Amino acid sequence: MIKNLILVLRPYQWVKNLFVFLPLFFGGKLMSFGCLFEECIVFASFCLMASAVYCFNDICDIKSDRLHPRKKNRPIASGIISVSKAYILMIICVFLSYMLIFSFRQYKVGTIISFYLLMNILYCLYLKRIAIIDVFIISLGFVFRVLVGGLAIDVALSHWIIMMTFLLSLFLALAKRRDDVLIFEKKGEVTRKNVDKYNLIFLNQSISIIASVTIVCYVMYTLSEEVIDRVGNKYLYATSIFVLLGLIRYLQLTLVDDKSGSPTDILLYDRFIQACVFGWFVSFFIILYL
Image 1 (cartoon, rainbow, N blue to C red):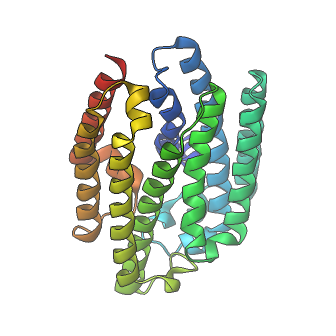
Image 2: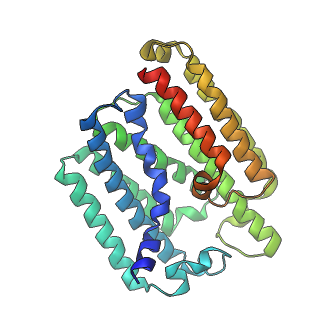
């Protein structure tokens, strides 16, 4: 029972909440223990709130999940965890999230997390049925993660980090929708209510466009005089190679291998992507901190 309750919380998805730490990294405060501690508290709070959203989402999607080749094995969809227990688990996660964040007087962060919860409740109940709006809301969720990370340590966020966060998450969301369309076209299984509003041609073109805009945005960021003056290094553009390699690899996994169903799994298991992330982090760390 405990194992299945943990599966409902989807702890493996908490890797997405690492976006909370971006302001800490880009703000040059990675070596500050106090700031790192604050970010860890916010990270834990956001993980709990995200798990509450996952509980509610699985409750709302119980019928469609039973038709999905992988999601049908989820504890709620399979009937191992009852809907009533799932609601109780959701309430507990919300309570613990607020208790944690308000215990450390992060009131502004609590406000943003509340907006995140409300937005996702509306998403689960209705907005996920509206094509394009659904992926935009997912992308906004990642922007909220960055916002709370900035508020927690009083780091002013530039328009660059907001734009790149939104674009990257939109790219991943569209790639994930492509997986739903593939299942629908190959097996006739409706795994998402708005799947008929997408097709492979539209998604392939949209994914390619967003990938192109993302890399251009990142290159412009690294060449921005404002950023170069703040960082104190004109070679920031060198980190673009890892971003470009990572995006092209993800496009390969999506368009060639048809493996875009779970961005989290790709990040956790694809060595090429991991090498790109590691290379980007190390090169950026050297430029920013050494």
